[in-house]
Length: 171
Image (cartoon, rainbow, N blue to C red; front, side):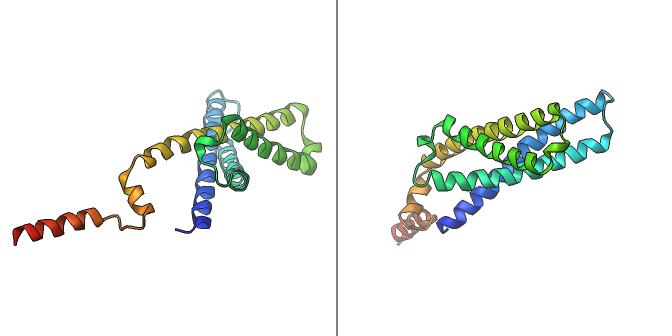
């Protein structure tokens, strides 16, 4: 698979992970408020949907920036504070964009809540994504099949070789 396809697949996967993580958290928070009688049920669906879409977009953008900035470095060489800082920076830029377009309608507590959710949420999701990627990288690195694929062999070559040797021994 070409490098650009792997990067695109990673960007979409990161976006889906960000959207699922934050969407689940927002859904849980709004469900608690619904059970307390503070908000109607429809608000749960709206808030969860909006958060999932926003964080999907932020996850795609974050992973694209990370692919450019950390090109050629493995996940084990990226520091957790660096990656969470990039994520928080992406959330901060999005918050500034929102504040410039509709911030005049925000109450101070809403502006602070949006700031915290975006900066802390994206930074946390970025850190969790790095930890998951490191864990996945070690399990893939330990596989013998990956080494064969890097050498250009077919994945089934050891099975075919063993079958040929067994057929020769029967003759």
